[in-house]
Image (tube, rainbow, N blue to C red; front, side, top):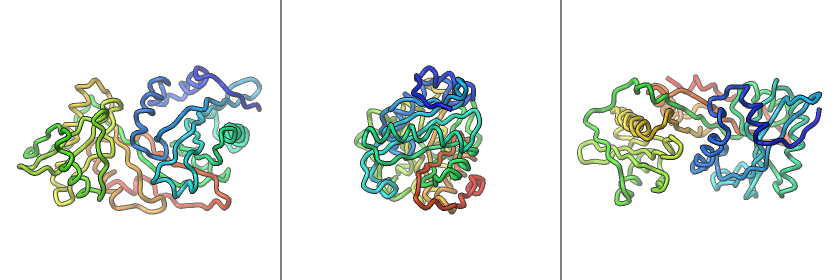
Length: 311
């Protein structure tokens, strides 16, 4: 077998055979991923492409991947101690998953990283068959995230609170947004008025919930937020209805939300509540991302199935 750099066109043509719903159009996918980097997750942060690699067997392309340079964001410093940048491998596709294919292609990717001064690298993978092979090869999971999607041709199956009024926020509403997020998850991420249409939910005269709608991706950036004392009153569902209608009016066919899970080896209650809310309101899991890195002493972790989160 032989590993070589390949063109974006060769990568795209190979991947089309797998009928991945996000990768039917490579340019559109990369544009979407670039805009999604506002989330600063382990799989979607500020990145630069280092090209595409292909694995050849008897002259036939049997595997591909994307190599990236990615910034290490402050909340990931624990996983990448002492690093400001790292290598990242994504969108691995093999005609069949096996350790022998990884053994051929990953050293070539690592050489690309080392030439650019990147001392370590991670792999973000959403295919369950790949998780087992990566662990067999000596990689261990260090982070986990769920990408959920809605088909906007379908209605949200649950009704929202009819007493809730949804309004679009402006800069003068930043104090309200801060108060909502502090009352929802304990810290505040300011919106980007360049990227976001900001929804605020009011119950009477009180601002009790919010969502940042990314007008470039169709994603609800950082999720739906409702202050704790107002949760379980169908306020979040009312926000989802408004988000669906607004994205649909912008021409989107899909709506997304990303949940980064707080722990790997046990079910966190906040994650369970969030995932149950999104899926009970018609969302479906499109990708479950797991971040892998090579460890000197890899250890086997029991990672709970997503079914254990959803009620």
